[in-house]
Length: 273
Image (tube, rainbow, N blue to C red; front, side):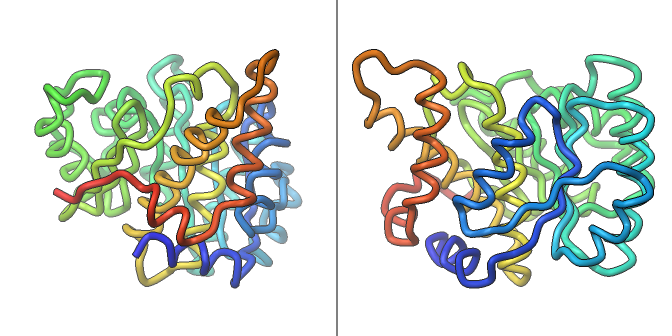
């Protein structure tokens, strides 16, 4: 049951190291606290190995790259692999620039990730560019729709199987696959795209969900996606006259803070293919 996944997060209080987007670092920290986790933020190469060592999971987000933070990502990632900790990649903007694409592909080649979360364009870039996923059929549209859903599900499964990790492809319809099964998730609101950082926040809480549910990684990743989308729905229902995207951002974090297992179980909209 997906509801048990958030209960386990609140019980375990997983410590998550985030090397993440400067634009959204505060929101990532706050939503991790809201879901029951505990965040640490560090991208200094001389600091990251020690920080990763005391955490249960590492969330790597390439949204605002520089050479120092790139070195930190590899050093922290290798330490996480060495210790058997949960490792997640958010390849923000992969395909948009040579630096982002090259960094994301190299991270995939040199590190073993438990999950990769991005939009379908970013995941396609990894599928085409990474030596670990050669042969993946990335000839799929850049948006998942009801019309191309079967093709997109096949792509998600193929990528997950060849990359050896959970693939979480988020958009209007979300797909979460371990290579064998695929959750098709229809939670969320289009208005979530009007605020910064919902994807970055999701990567943070997904890492926490994976740390707290190590034997149910597929369910944990799907639960995180459903929780974030459901939070967008609940937050939108609480908007008042005069509220805008800033209020919506705060209400999403509040919705996660107040979410329990029963609320998630009842509100999650998904099917498994």
